[in-house]
Image 1 (cartoon, helix red, strand yellow):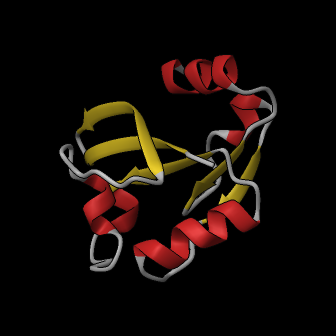
Image 2 (cartoon, rainbow, N blue to C red):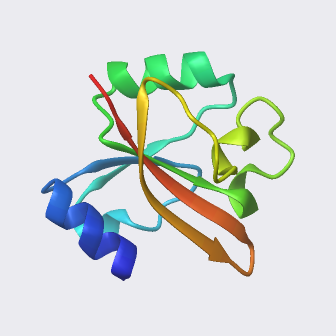
Length: 100
């Protein structure tokens, strides 16, 4: 709920990209499913769908060689702003805001 509250404070009715539905219920938002692609195309798709946040969770992205790096705590990308990090029992969970 901590993460849902943070996202809701940043944007009402957010579009959240992740592999499975989870946060949209708590944020009154919408899930945009994470495509199986590379990071550049993932960001293009996020912008095309007006996605507000990307949730990268090791549990969901394990084995996704092209985008699993998003779960690394020190990963940087000029199109993404890291706004949340949590180390869970299922691996790191990182949330990015899409920069325009």
